[in-house]
Amino acid sequence: MSGDFYFSWHPGLRVVFLFTPFVIAMSGVATACFIACSRDFTSMLMALPRCPWLQQQILIWGTTSFKSRYYLVNTMCVAMLCPNIGIRRGLLDADEIRNFPISLKRRMVVAAWLVIIGSAWLFVGLALIKLSSAR
Image (cartoon, rainbow, N blue to C red; front, top):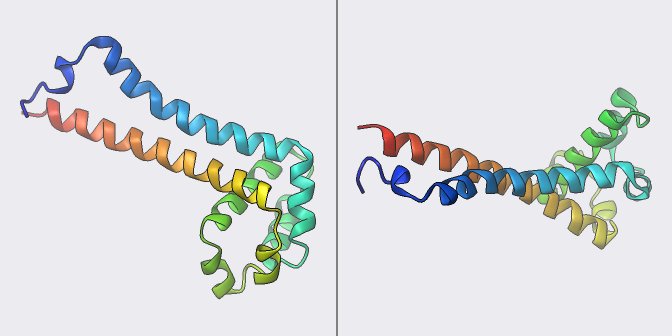
């Protein structure tokens, strides 16, 4: 692969390559924002009444502002990705996670994965561009 591999692409293809990770990641952010602003937020809180970690975060952040609701949703999205770690540490209740609404859990996991994939694509893509331009 030559040093100007990326720069030999059509300009439109380069723009699409750099713009796509933002679209993917922002789709995940928008999904989390929707959950934070909808009745799904209340459903999430009602499904996890004995979750010690969530209750501690609610005491610290509250649930009235958008910022606090968005933070709580995102942290629970990550907790839904790997609940076994939180259960082992005593931060999550296994029964509550097992009985969590499946449609909401699916949306939360998808939102987390969209942000992860978009961010990874962006960082790997920029690293490849930097490496291809270095001589």
